[in-house]
Length: 189
Ligand code: FES
Ligand code: FES
Image (cartoon, rainbow, N blue to C red):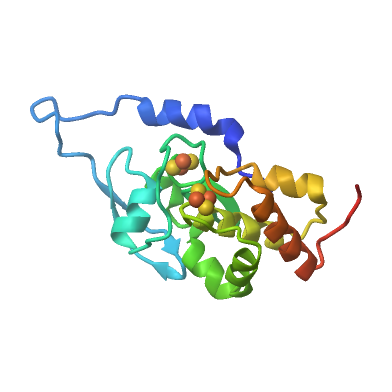
């Protein structure tokens, strides 16, 4: 269920590739097309340029505010969203790759799992809050995967993203309660 960070280097290579531009006008125009992702239940055509990132389309075309970038390099997980149910780094995904697919951000997962914010608060798993949307998305992916989890697997899930404030213990505790609430907890260790 974990985010596929193993392909991050390959994705960065793809984004770094030169693209064809009009030699008379190196700044553009781009070969624009339109993609139509469904974001938090709303399908919309978005203007697509080569290399346009999903995270930028989410914020500028769909008004998403929870999904943000920090490293822009596939490492921190702040930009994590669900694409067809799988956690994805939206800073490494081109918007055309989301054409026809379903994207969910923290706004949507909180609407479907409103108890998550209370659990995070109770365990002090939120300090500055910058990492929180990505962790809410990971927690939802864990719930929807429906696989049994232990402390070991919880730590693997939580290690997908980076938090600079909490020391991770409170986030692991929040994930443990979420797993218990959803009947996923197996204390195998
Ligand atoms: S901003 Fe996407 S992984 Fe850090
Ligand atoms: S709460 Fe500040 S980065 Fe996680």
